[in-house]
Image (cartoon, rainbow, N blue to C red; front, side, top):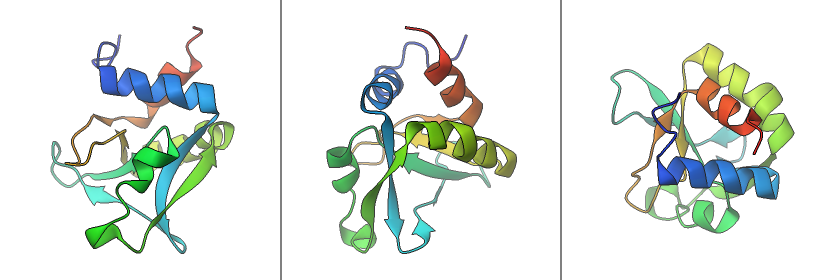
Length: 117
């Protein structure tokens, strides 16, 4: 059982991503937003949101050149998560305006999305 099983932010991300069939990332041309982990030294985190409005909120100040870009959920699960796992990148899920939120292993996202409701 995942340590995020009872985390409301993580569970909200999973439920809304399933419902909408997409996740949102911040993009600037070909570049996607990647930040350093707060919790783990020498680890990158790529934040994703389960709705466009929450992602767009972060397109200001130092990230004002970025825009929210949708990733279809099947593409996210079938390609992105494996690649991020192989690269040792964590997933930030539905970070708030202070950039607080879970930093999760890609396999945990995949397992949670695959679980039958």
